[in-house]
Structure formats: C-alpha cells, structure tokens
Image (cartoon, helix red, strand yellow):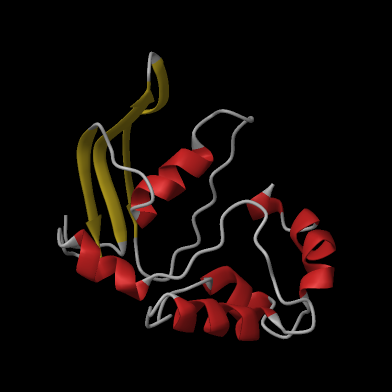
Length: 137
C-alpha cells in the first residue's frame, strides 16, 4: 500500500447495530479525482471522517501518502465536510489557505478539484458550480 495518496483496506465503521461503512477498500493515486456517490446514509461522510481521523474505524487499515503514521500524514490534508462555514468574500483558494493555516496543515493536497477548477470563484457561486459538476453529484 504505497502507490497512492489515500488507501483503505477492509475499512469498517459501526454505530451501535448500524454499519455505516462496511469492508471498504479504495486506492486513490496522486492526481486522481475520486467522487463518492450514494444516497443519504450510504456512508460517504463517514468514510471521509475516517480518512480525516474525525472518527475511529472499528476495523481495517488506512494509509495516507504511503504512511501508516496517520497523525503525521493528516497534517498534509485540508478538508471541508458537509456545510462548512466559509468566508463568502474570499475565493476558494483563499478559504482553503485560511483553513490550512488554522489546522496547521501544509495544505499541499487540500481541495485539489476546487483549486484546479474554481480557485478564483467566490463561495456564493459554489452551489451552482458544484451542481453542474457531474463528478460531484
């Protein structure tokens, strides 16, 4: 498990008797854009929280940037999950830079799709921009 920026093997997370993520194995290579598609309750947000260390898996492995040292590796990640509080007068790039600073992350890989395609857009435009991006629906 050393080819990718994010890898999971047999990742599982349960909340009581409900299984939110079951036996997920994925491999995201550097430069890839990876979309999670599914109905409400399918486990998309839970998977992201597992990758970011916001919740602990019940079983399985997570490797980030080729390292099992998750604490160190996660410092290289910036993230905004669900309905984030954004500075509406700043661009996507400026928002990601601010959150990178606040979390003491290098921001090296944060928000790749935003930075490549939308870095100069203001958050007020994000909803219409994202609604037209089929990879995010």
